[in-house]
Image (cartoon, rainbow, N blue to C red):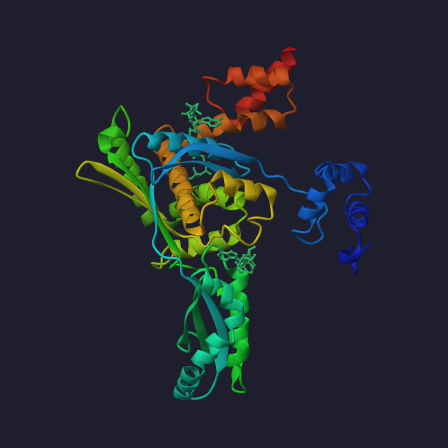
Length: 425
Ligand SMILES: CC(C)(COP(=O)([O-])OP(=O)([O-])OC[C@H]1O[C@@H](n2cnc3c(N)ncnc32)[C@H](O)[C@@H]1OP(=O)([O-])[O-])[C@@H](O)C(=O)NCCC(=O)NCCSC(=O)C[C@@](C)(O)CC(=O)[O-]
Ligand SMILES: NC(=O)C1=CN([C@@H]2O[C@H](COP(=O)(O)OP(=O)(O)OC[C@H]3O[C@@H](n4cnc5c(N)ncnc54)[C@H](O)[C@@H]3O)[C@@H](O)[C@H]2O)C=CC1
């Protein structure tokens, strides 16, 4: 039987579910129950979520946690984190507490420029194109006046429009390279609207517009965050060895792409969690961060560390185009709450907070990796997930948690202990 369908989008939610259950699940009633048990009991709230995307049939929950004790630029924060992976929030909390007694995190936005491009093809004389652009430039600004009016009042808008010759990379390929300041918004829709107006005005017989779109590679929307302290203040025992191995771990990530990818994945554990909790676009952040990590031509660590004159310093530089207005930021009740928890920051302050979340997460991972190994803490947090997968009762869960208090946790070890417990009973 064919599984294609036309007019699916026009069905109501229950009809969509019925089609799905009969087509893919052999009419199993439990499937409908699972989908419906994740509906919000408040219909107004459910309607809100339904409208975020298309063909919504249920909600997919992510745990929403908080990591207290962050001190950033002398100010106290509790970070909201939406993430499915165990040990990330615990690790952030642990590191926040650790650095809160060592001067906290320092963070600074370096620049906030966003980028958009009108990609086009032109086969004629280059100088003619250059002259055409020079004559047109003022008009290109003018046609966006209505769109940029409010943004200009906030101190933003279009910063510049450049003609770029890309013919050495692709035959007949040029672009209008447009830079923007979007203040407290990520600016994707604002930028795209401006670009389309610019492209319309610029197009003519011998200029074929291919597309107009913002770039998610924003190396000039950059934030720096760091921690530092005397090496001897790092840990009570063997601080020097700890600092040395920590720096080596970062150097390895800078020298070796396989390690760099995992290293940066750990950083993104912290970054994405706050990005998602604040209603920002994590795909945009991910794509931009990894492109930045590869800017030298080989993929490297997003963090760096050194020891100079007895001082351990650990820092991150990362492009983060985030907003505190626009998108879902004020629409999703939990994003709104997250921003309120952070004191309703500006986009710049949010960039600093998110960079710190990434740095803290990387500190936690490298600390664990270079000392006890990652599995000890990670499996301690993951233990309850394994126990639940086994279908253990509350009593059995309590027994297993106590049993593994001082033992190495592996999936097999938990299964064995559970089977023994159930067998014994
Ligand atoms: C997991 C910990 C924190 C345990 O660390 P611990 O020392 O066993 O924790 P503790 O029980 O002594 O508690 C100390 C503090 O840790 C936090 N903490 C501790 N437990 C909890 C909890 N249940 N809920 C909330 N917070 C918790 C909390 O701040 C607590 O202070 P308190 O609140 O008691 O004043 C530590 O072992 C750790 O940081 N491990 C690293 C974990 C990590 O990095 N996880 C990321 C996932 S692994 C990954 O995907 C990335 C990776 C590793 O591949 C990246 C890479 O390779 O670079
Ligand atoms: N490639 C990408 O990353 C793309 C992303 N998107 C999506 O676009 C959304 C973000 O676009 P935005 O234009 O940021 O959101 P948006 O379309 O909701 O617009 C935000 C608007 O808020 C207004 N505003 C009010 N106060 C402001 C202030 N203080 N500073 C700046 N603006 C203020 C401005 O008019 C601004 O244009 C996200 O949902 C993202 O997922 C859309 C297209 C492509």
